[in-house]
Length: 581
Image 1 (cartoon, rainbow, N blue to C red):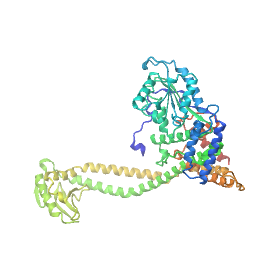
Image 2 (image 1 turned 135 degrees about the vertical axis):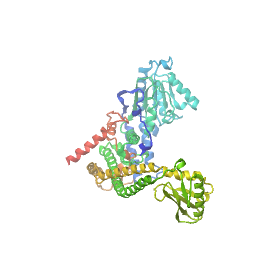
Image 3 (image 1 turned 30 degrees about the vertical axis):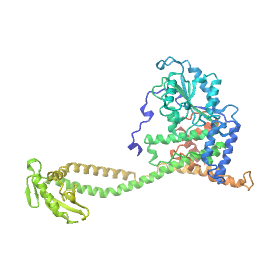
Image 4 (image 1 turned 120 degrees about the horizontal axis):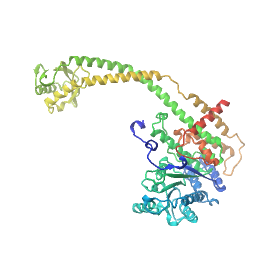
């Protein structure tokens, strides 16, 4: 439906001249987690358990707050009040890469942008923006200066307090005075035209929306960039909420791509993708690394997708049945109208130019004005005969009649030709005196002059109805073509749920006052609905393989435009599992 009303062209379709992305995809820089971070993520599980049990008030703690704290910790533990990573974490990894690129490009000439040498790098970070207390922005700049970069060449977009100062910063980026510009998506997204020297872009964190990723990367993958090759780097901390964030954005991007390219697989069944928190099961998966929980999320998502497609198939079957049922009466009506129109065309007399003549209330006239005056008089006489229809004359070989509709409060007079299936000329009883006599006659003769067009339209409509009815008859009764796959996935879903369901244990007191049995029940209750709580279940694509790569530190790419190999691999794994049972 969206594709029918919107004209959308993606970047791939436009194929504009933009710089090439090295390795054809963004590079993932995997940062190992510290012991403190691993412990903190485990503490989030305890908080999620409390939320799941209802042991805390929503205003005190909730899954959205837990998600926010997890995102901050993945960037830097100091954002959640903990001691920093002894190895430096993301900011150290980013500083090392930024300085390496700076050393490789600081002597690069850009003749079109002035005599100053050197490329530009952009760093995006939405969390921990500059403030008086400690923040990742100041931390990153300090580390860049320590590694030899001039402090004046590293700027924050937040230092620009108004549009004029922002324009000055952008001008310095284009001239080469600034080597690294750090900012948030909001302040450095739309309207940031600094692409000319941009050679690398760094994502220190991941935003919620694919549109934000597109805005960020649109600052460098842009016409006017003088670099033939550029880099995009995404920094991901292992076993942290970064896994969830990049997987979420990837699923949202796939959903949006389906809509914008008119993917019929959606079958008009689209779900919301706006929720911004994890389910308890996902928090547990991040903390434990249990692949079954991550697989369950993927299987649940696939089941939800196929169930929507099955529902759409059932809806289509009902629509096909209605199409066939309505075709009979519609065909009969149109065939009758076509017969009347063909007969009317054979009978229609010539009323053009001097050949015009008409009889009204027993008097034959050759002038349109006289005929119009007599029709107006007949309408005035008939306007109080509510519910009646009477013949008042003859025109072009057809009877001319008037039908009185309505009541004394609101009366309409319908001038029509009873033998011809065309629209009447409708005149309000209060408007008779204002009708121009000649204009009234012209409206009637135009109706008769449109008989050929009306006949053509009816023939076209009849042909379309017959074609639709034939196609509907061919499709009606066909089964859902993925019923087998849906059954297999449901079976796998049950297997995983059984494997994840804790076995009954003796009640024993734990630190928070709840029994182990109660915690097991909470875990069972939450993990049983992981798929239902996924923010982007509508896309039908879960990044199981992608998430596993990041958790395991394989360093594989998290490019939003990856192909369908992950989905096919998951499907193959499920099929092999079913075949082995």
